[in-house]
Length: 343
Ligand SMILES: C[S@@+](CC[C@H](N)C(=O)[O-])C[C@H]1O[C@@H](n2cnc3c(N)ncnc32)[C@H](O)[C@@H]1O
Image (tube, rainbow, N blue to C red):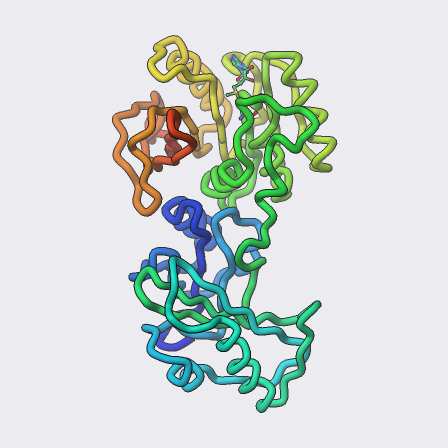
C-alpha cells in the first residue's frame, strides 16, 4: 500500500453506511479511515482480512496495493509494483458509473507487467487475484491482492429468504440479517441469540458465520418451520419454543439480534420488546443489541447514520441506519449497548 495504509476495504453498493459499520466491528484491530470514495475505506494496522469472506457489505479487502486519484492507465501502471507470483488473475471492476477507460484494457496492461515480472496466470482458478477498482464516486482507483469474494460474487441473490423451505413475508433478507449479526457480534465470543426468531433469517446468518447461536419463538408453527430452514441451511443452531419475556436464555450472550413483531405505532409491541430485553439482561449484562424495526419510508440514508428518537429501556443507542425496502416500507436498524447501571 502506498503511504501508511495496510489495506483498502472495498464495500458493496447496497448500503455503504452499514458496510462501514460492519467493517469497523469485523476488523477492530485496525483503524479505518473514510475516503472521498463512498465505498472505499483505508485501514491502518493489520487485521485478519479473511473475515471479509463472512461479511455482507464487503466486496473484498485489497492488500499490498494502493489508492490514488485516477489519471490514466500509464499513471496507474507506473504506481503498481509488479511481483512474481504463480497462478494469478487480474480483475478490474467499476463502482458508481464510468471512469472513461475500459476495464479489459486495464486487466490487459496490468497482466502484462506481472507477466514481465515472471508471474504465471490461471484465469479459471487463480490462486491469487489482483483487483483494481475504478471508483467514480470521487474519481479514484484502488488496487491490491484481493481477500474476499469480489464484486457480485457473494451470491446474495441466491440466498433470498424465499428460496428456503419455510418462508413467510416476515422473513428478513439475508444480507441485512448477516450485516446485523456482524455489527452486533463482531469478533466477540458468546452466543448470538434471536429471542423472536420467526423463520430463522437471523439464526441462519449467524450459524453460517460459525457463531454459537440460539433462537426462540413462541409460535409452534414458526419453530417447526425455522427448524426446517436450519436443517436446509446445514447450520449448527439451537432453536426452542418459549416466551421470550420469561425464558431462561444462555448466560454467555454477546449479541442479541432481533426483528420483533412491531406495528409502526403500537405501544403493546414496545412493551413486549422492553420485557424481552429486560429478561435477557437479567442473565447477560454485557450483551450488545441490534434491533430492526419496520418504519414508514422517507428516512433512508445509504451513506450516513440517521438520528432516531427511539428509546430502549436498559440500553444506550449507539447508531441507527435507515434502510429502503419498498415504496411503502422502510426499516430502521438500531445498534445499542447495555447501560452501565446493569453492570
Ligand atoms: C417479525 S417476526 C421475526 C421474523 C424473523 N426475523 C425471520 O427472519 O423470519 C417476529 C416473531 O416474534 C415472535 N414472537 C412474538 N412474541 C413473542 C414472544 N413473547 N416470545 C417469543 N417469540 C415471540 C412471533 O411468533 C414472530 O415469529
